[in-house]
Length: 315
Image (tube, rainbow, N blue to C red; front, side):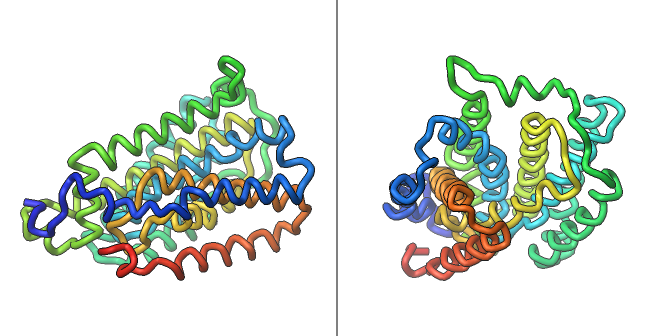
């Protein structure tokens, strides 16, 4: 029984750790950018914000699952690059999507089995996979691909009732992640593993299978993010997913998901993605050097982690 670790389904305060600061941070950033830039509040820019944020949102929601168990997945961005390269270079789109799905599933299984069965540290395990994918993507797609006609384009670029269809991708991702993590026994056990893995094991729950499933979810989110990017851009490069590696971890940390596991929420991840999207968009409007943008993102990540204290959260 999960009561062995005093972890009740209704105890949302300890699990979510959704502070007022996390909620209002995107609003504060948006107001600041509206004051210091001239293009942030334009209609074109606001219309592009959701399509820009959607791949990061999908990837970050998937990353949340292994992080809640006390793990991490830093291979997800490189996996996006590999899956996108496979879809672009395949002889048929159906074959490319099928092959990409197989790669994503296999990656999640390998990461999960490596972490649980062979007891490899999650950072080391997923770093190894990231290095493999970083080398594999240029082999699959040596040069930048030209524009490719894809059936995914209207599913990503079109509008419905005047709203970009990306809103529905984002909404579906949020709803599915929330339903699994907040309204299912699987989600409750994910929190429990992150809070006290040994107690979960003693209660008779196979935590290995659960952790493996979380890594599979993370890899599948990379697959979906790659599909969205491919449909939106109609092309790919061997490193198209590289920015998502740092950004997804940063968004999860900003959103209050404890990187040591057991605490976090879908709402927090959404706020973290919104805040980081506003920051990146604002830096583009301010013509900040791309390399300096990565430095700033790294500083934000370090700052978010520095404030993650268990005693403040109550775990």
